Length: 310
Image (cartoon, rainbow, N blue to C red; front, side, top):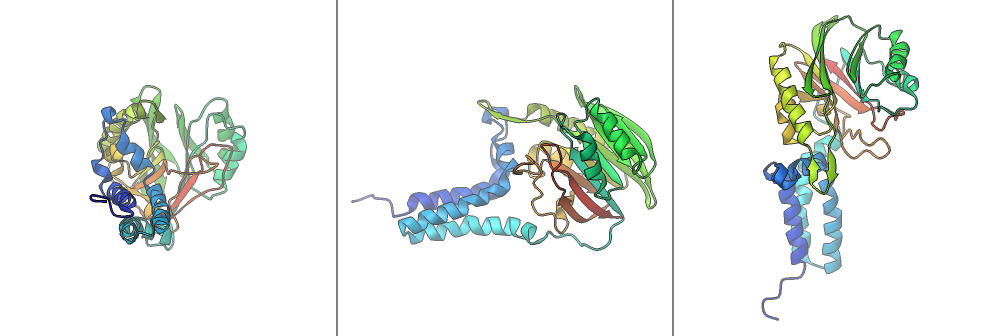
């Protein structure tokens, strides 16, 4: 029949679309009018690779050389982007000077003391906790007190340290959400530590609702710009990934610990079946040596850890 599409044309078109999403996700509409589609895609960007085996299967079923050839493109794009991540990252490895952990402990955590023992067992000198509530905060203070005698809690975020802390203060980013800043006096010199928990996002009829998170991210970026120079850590639950350009004002100023060997995708949420790394360890003037997720606790997030070198 005249004008009939070649066999596998639809599969080939979908393969080109998948490759385009992987390559051009920064140009996907990101405003509220578009349901914050860009943030949604970027949050789950590594999972775009699942399109490759599905499309390849369709090409084989259709016995279409055109479709099979087209599937090579998204496979190549995904492999170039995420192959090094799966191979172990691009960091230097070697000895570390400092280990840090961040963990959204969940305000409904049934075992805060057990969670505290679990994160302390990582050997981290600095432990950031988010979603703290009373009376659970008391359990964290009692359990971590022996190993981490210095601590500061502001609102729902806290920092426990084996090093003395000074210049502790907090600034609001949105109502009911604070960013804690403290200076940790390590043997290698002072390190500025920020602990933040950005508002949650939801997927509903109106799309991906990120408005409050994005507002908080802009406020956090302003706090970071006004902060001191030198080595710094930014720890916390951002409810977004480092691929999300809506958080660029925050993430562009730091290096993700995901660049370290062994970090992999580092998915941290939800704990039962992690699909996104929304918990972050970001560094400035420090080198990630290794990074990993820790075993599940009583939280709906996994703790994440990173070892760093000055």
